[in-house]
Image (cartoon, rainbow, N blue to C red):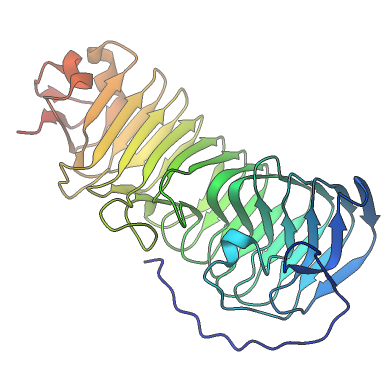
Length: 371
């Protein structure tokens, strides 16, 4: 579970820092678009030891370019349950519609409860090119987006040891041709810290992934859209995805609503959806999914699978669905289902009308109505 208690010794050290004039945020390098719209800095190492402070804080619509810099958060950890929503204690914090470009930069956190990059608010975006992000202590994610912020990473090495590669609390994160290694509690967390009506988006394209702990994807108390295209999986746990109620939100109304789209993607693992959550799994051309969905019967979960021509689902255990749809005629679509296991579907759901409530043989198993 994701509920964690951290006991942190907070040490306040003195450093050269500038306080933001409107907020209580502090940073070693404070960049305000109200003072100067376009700013640039390169070939410098910056450090923050300020309690709750950032190395870089970009605000008020600034356009900031950082090139060949090393940005280190080395001290000043905090215990603040709202820090992810505010962005406090992140190595890099951008808000207020700011645009930040990091080229050939290293972003490093050596303390607990510190995220690497936080983008907060609509029209705020951080772009990373050919850099690295290293999170070396508990409770820190490499990327954190809040309230409509966006982060795009290209050809970047990302490593976390004690949380997640990224947190999406309303907004979007894109990874392109990156090397991603997670050793925390899950790979990617899409959630709603305060509200369940948020919209989170995650795109993974041509990355190299190693997921050591927890599910690759967790969705809770939010609406989430996840797309995977042509990624290579070096290693991962048995659980591909968990869509469920958890710590955040109002009990009984804090399930997740998720969409997972696989394009030219081979991936293995179990998918679990609890009774107050929903999932739409789309297997597009070139997708190969090896796994099971809700192995233990869960009639209340809304799980819909759509399989296009050229995609294959190899079923690794009994699976329970609300509906299954093929873009091909049913007879051809059934051949796209492999494995010696049974898939159960709801014969009363309108999406299953082409199946006529019947039992079918698949490419090794069965597709059966759930009575």
